[in-house]
Image 1 (cartoon, rainbow, N blue to C red):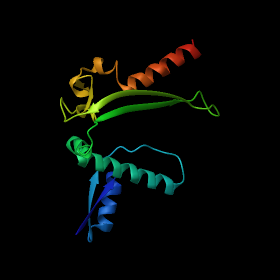
Image 2: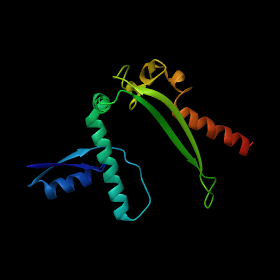
Image 3: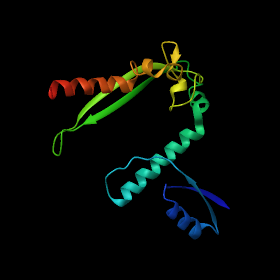
Image 4: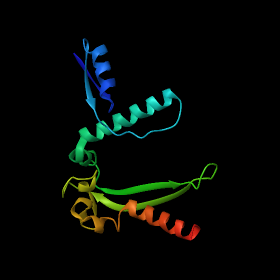
Length: 157
């Protein structure tokens, strides 16, 4: 019997799909957060499906798998990038705030509490080996948010 993953947090939808497909297809459920986008019903369904597949792939690949992808390459340099957009309201052009932190991909070290923190090394320590305050002073997210914070202070004193 073929198995598919049905991505929903709605137990009633899951039960209905399992009742309809269950005699020929095993329906498993995965709770994966996917972003809400605007668009046609078809565009939204396709984008959610793409994001769920990417998330599933990265989960299955894991930290070791990500490292193996770089095995053929001597240079393990990577750049973490965070981008925030801010709009002051309808019709206003969004302003982009971007932060970047350069590092190296390394075998996992530290507690795996958040994303790829155990494999992103910055100046000798992985993000997972740093305490939260230390990481929050050098991370790509911090750098983007510091730019946003400064812009807000200057624009709305």
